Amino acid sequence: MEPIISVQSLKKSFKANHVLKDVSFTIPKGSIFALLGSNGAGKTTAVRILSTLSRADGGKATICGYDVKRQADQVRECISLTGQFAAVDEILTGRENLRLIGKLRRLPDVAKRADELLASFNLEDAANRLAQTYSGGMRRRLDIAMSLMGNPQVIFLDEPTTGLDPQSRIAMWEMVKGLAGSGITVLLTTQYLEEAEYLADRIAILHEGVITAEGTAQELKTTLPRGSVQLDFNKSLDAEAARVLLDMYRIKKVEGEPRSIDVSTDGSPAQFADVLSRIDNSDIPLVRFTQKLPTLEDVFLKLVNGNDNQA
Image 1: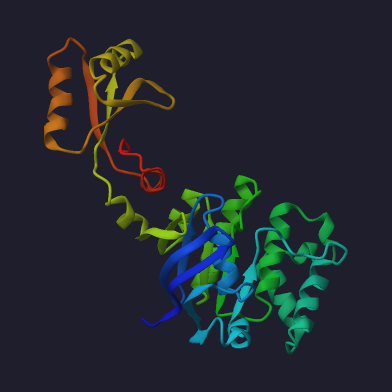
Image 2: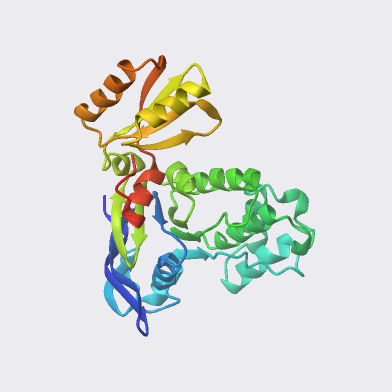
């Protein structure tokens, strides 16, 4: 499928700070692409360049077939941006905010489109209330609705759930899924691992100015060995005895399970056999032995921190 967004060797520096060193990726139409990284990784800088708010120092990017640098006006016609902080006018009502954007974009039948979006984002009951009375989740929904006033083909969501409570975050996730389901391409930046895993068709991990890994969540997980095993015992004292017995391995507590331990190996049959043999030759009764799959958090920490002990 022809990509709707294509980024090749993007570079951006602020004096001696090389924020983007060599960033490349492509995004198919109608998909959700997550740019995952820690604070300061360069996610927002990449979004600002792609949304024509900033210029790259090198490389090339095209959106909807238009060059971001040379054809910025055409790019703006097919994109919309929702930044990290809601950009609503608090002294206007929800409906007035939407109509204002529609008029600025010179859209036909602004009132009808505003009403459609108020209904789609469950804001009809609050449509005539001032935006300053909205909750954080409501403001975020209104902010995204304003971004959709021009029927964009591509929408950039820069950390859209930052500061939201868990219930509002889950509601926002479903909303983003709905956007992609309607054919809109979504580029999402986030530092929440579970958000990227739940939403994205593909994930790129941005670290120190480069993409260190890209793929589906499952593909990224398979880059690590399946070396973590959980040992379950009848008593917490047995779990502690096993911890001492296996002190040559990295061992973690299992949250909420004092009778269990998590043992990290290199994933080889030899180390699995060694763990079982040591337990079997001891007087510690083992209830269960479970191999654990790597998580996206394991992958992220491995790539960002270079932590060789991740399971």
